Amino acid sequence: MMNWLLEPLTYEFMQNALAAGILVGILCPIVGTYLVVQRMALLGDVIAHAVLPGLAIANFLGIELLIGAFAFGMLSTFVITWIRTQSRVKVDAAMALTFASFFALGVTLLKLLHSRLDLEELLFGDILSVTIADVWRIGLIGLAVLVAIKLFYKELLFYTFDRTGAEAVGLPVHKIHLGLMTGITLTLIVGMKIVGVILVVSLMVGPAITAYLLVKELHQMMIVGAGVGTLASLVGMYLSYYLDLPSGPAIALTVFAFFLLALLFSPSQGIVTRRWWRSVPSRSHR
Image (cartoon, rainbow, N blue to C red):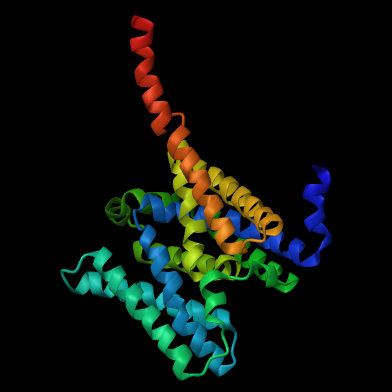
């Protein structure tokens, strides 16, 4: 058993991949908790796809990809807000339109600019190519986001559950919204290297909704979600190594497996446990 656990660690690329997976497994669910509680999970998917034009342009200009991805990720949130505030269009429709439009623009720019970016790697990630420099970058960005959440936890909590009330007591809700969008965008960008544009949302939302089925408080959701995300990253990486599976999809499928377990067996909300508890009175009556 010990050899089975230690063998992958003899390779440097696996050490880097596991370290990056743990960091992203902690960061994504903590930030994703806010999306789940605000019923805005689709927004993560929108931003994840909206960064594609920024990646194409940054690659063409020869600048840091993170800059281009961040610029267009934030632009997508402004577009959604602008459509929602300037028309009768609902937020879900605005997100769907922005999602499709930005992604189409990204694919078009990759073609027109003759980009050397690998579209398959962007969509599905390549955690095995993560370098120690990438690990440090993920760690520093993750630390900055988590420190900001810690410092402004009360304001974010108030904003998340009662935006109107937060505005009424004088909280700068627009700045809080901007800060939250910044944290979400940065988290999605660092997660893209691990599981790609398509699957990063599963790591952000999956552990968060798993925790939602298990606990009730926001801070508990963050802690449990981070634990689930970390475990899913580790299990997915080991499955990928021993079964010769693509790493990103292996992690995403592990996340879904954990969610199904919580959906079925959560002590308070599980499908199986609810049926069992309903049957207990009838059994005792007999």
